[in-house]
Structure formats: C-alpha cells, structure tokens
Length: 273
Image 1 (cartoon, rainbow, N blue to C red):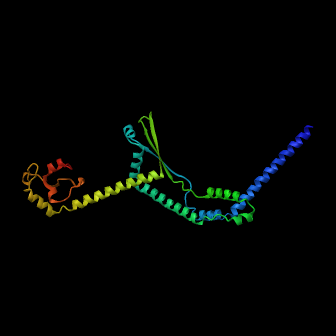
Image 2 (image 1 turned 90 degrees about the horizontal axis):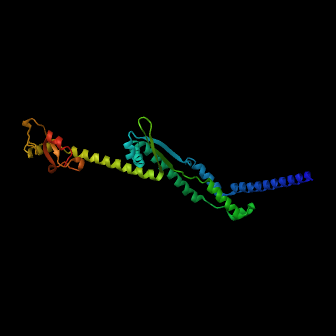
Image 3 (image 1 turned 60 degrees about the vertical axis):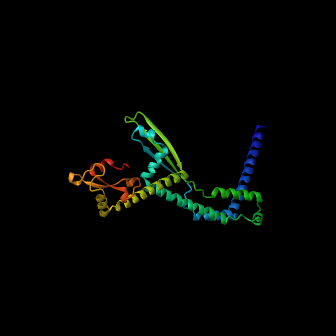
C-alpha cells in the first residue's frame, strides 16, 4: 500500500514538473519569437549599437576635504566646501561639466531618434505569428523598457573631515550633490570667475590711462605738494598721483578723481575713500 502511494505521488510530482516545464518552455518560445519579430525592439537594439558610447552606469565622484582646525570645520558648510573645491580645481570640474553636456546631448539625440523609429508591430504580423495581440504588446513593451538606455547622471559625494591633533576626536559630515545641483554650482563659480576677470581687466585698463602727461597735469594743478599734509619734493618726500576713489572701488583715471599725495599719506590712505 505504501509503495502504491509513493508511486502515485511520484507520478503526480513528475507530471506537475513536466507541465510546468512545458508552460515555461512555451512562454520562452513566445518571448523569443516576439524578440525576433518585434520591429520596435529590433530598431531599438540597432539604435543601442550606434549609441553604445553612452555610459549607462551611475558615476560617483568621492573625495574627502580635511579641515586644519575645528573652527574651520564648524564654520564651513558642506556646500561651501564643495564650492571652494570647484574654485581650486576649476579645470578638473570644467572637464566633468563638458562630459555631462556631451552625454546629455547624446542621450537626448538617442531618445529623439528612437521616437522617430518606434514602429509598433502590425496586427497582421502578430496574427501570422499565432500570438495573442495583448500578450504580444505587453511583452514588447517590457522588452523596450528593459533595453532602453537610461542616462544615470553623475553624483558627487563629499566628506568634510576633522581630527584633533592627538587623534582623540573625529568629526565628519557628508554632502551628496547630484548632477543638476552641480551644474548650478559650477555655473555660479564660472560667472564669479568671469566677473573677477572682467574687473581685473577694467582695473588694468584704468591704470594704463595714467600717462606721464596726466601725472604732470595733476602735480601742476595741486602746486607740486601733497593735498593732505602739504609736503613737497624739496622736503624729501616722494609725490604720488592717487585715485581719490580707488580703481578697486570703481574709480576712474580722470582729473577730477586724481590728487597729489606724498608717499606717507598715500600709504596711510591705501584704498580708503
């Protein structure tokens, strides 16, 4: 009796295994048939081959910024630390920015091209394959989704760190910056640098306007003496032509903004206004 039960149970298990195997194999055959005959999927695979240079894996830049003192660590926010690093390594981050732009442009072209070549398989062809229409489109949709290239973007992981001189105390705070935020921070730094370069050029241009003729006219107008203390060259001082409103504060090289100062008064005035 026990042998019969074991035999029947074995037959049932084997039958179930065979049925499951047939179902799986049948589904696999349908899956393979759809892969081979779906025009949309075939077009996508061909497009992927042409755009295989797009990096579909997420890129993460990790680095530590060590603070020299606890006061600097407390005062410096994670965002400010990242901005300082961008300013210090401008060329390095500029290359990353160019890479982001390049890959995003490639990805946008990829999506645009796929939208043009996406052709759903005709109902007549599906019918000729002997596959249920809803099942065909469902599997085709999943194939498209699973094989479409996705631009994962770039992430920056900053760790701000400080350790006491004897190593007893350790402090750290992390900052994760995603691609969109990085592009904004980088553009802010880039504009700041451009503005600084523009200001430097303007100051250089204003200083170049100080000709020997202009200097002579200012000295003559002021009676060859310091307008603050009245010292003259005969008293052993050196006379300078000074900008009343410093160039660093927007002053221009023109007669109304120029004055004669001795070296001591000019040194004391510095860039004050």
